[in-house]
Length: 522
Image (cartoon, rainbow, N blue to C red):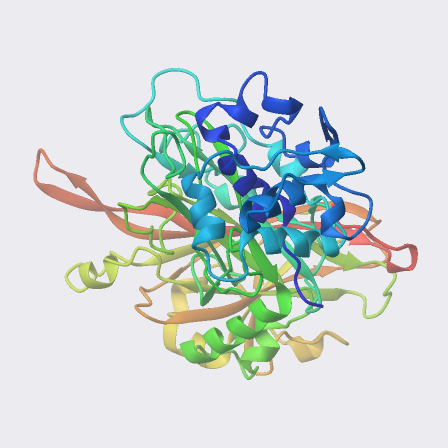
């Protein structure tokens, strides 16, 4: 099914800057012209003092809001609809009108607006995401424009501030249903599905940003990336920005048109699951990582596959944060690695059963690749597995491709872990053909991995459970944390020591479901 324009991200955000919301005038003032308040995302679905702004039909000419813009674009007379004459808008020739209509390549704004009306006028305002935006930042602000991506509820951009160690579970990054604007939490990603990836960003600086501010300020941009499920970093694909007028454009830079000092906004990207999976298959194949006998397509399309997401922001004068950065080291990046992990209690055999979650890890702090040449402590990783699970779902397993295990791990890397003969566990299928499976010590366990350089490691985490002993409902959570040895510099003594810093991870929300009764992910 072809993609449709987004009302909120593609059209509404442009309507705001066409009609001077960024300067608190016309339709963005306390008493907006004609009663049309473009500070409100639902405004177009309501009325002005002349009547309804959108018509009942799929004919764009029946919608006054489209007709007044079309008259401006074509040089026509003020439109008359239902016996009511409407003014030509926008007033004058705002820079945004020149950018989005006069000088824009096809499709131009007025045509894209018509396409949206003909597609059914879908209201995709992401109210759930908008509801997570914190109030304006109180207190002293930093000099200039200081962008950040929100890594937790109430994030004010201070770093390290109160950013939690499992920031990937708390960041304000969401999947949104394009048909409704509702935030969704799918149990798995179907290749036929489309989503928006939306994120909350902020400006903790004392200066306004955005080229459509009045007066114009520094340009602001955002980008969205998705990766195969990982603890630190992995092969990735950039998402198309929903600010693109062309729904088929692959341009990944989202234009943030204005962001006032101490305020927040929401940015969005188009996530077509099939397109993303195809891109990730190519990226995983190109990485050359050992997948234990699986193909890249089999790895990416594993049952219940999920994606890790990162959202980056910058001013036009800044470079992009590196994908290997973390919110603890760079506030201009946020990450979401949180997924439901369902055990089906209606499947009574085998008992016990094991469900697997494939993941990837790689070096995150890039400069340590070079630093580790003179200090072998630097760049070493520790992967820690913490589980909060009830009786009946309290067995954990770690599967590693056989060649990877022989190449990267020392005999003493896995203290407390025990080798498992999977063939001896009746009916349990390992996650990949060529494997070493280890039983993980309960509650908390850790193992070390040397610096990986340009390579990635593929692994799988398994949860053993008894369908007879667990009941439908939440069962707990599993958190996997990747830490890396990095230098802690003492400038006064002109020396450094190595310390472990958190560079990534993921959280699985384990629940038991009964597929005979249907299931909606939380």
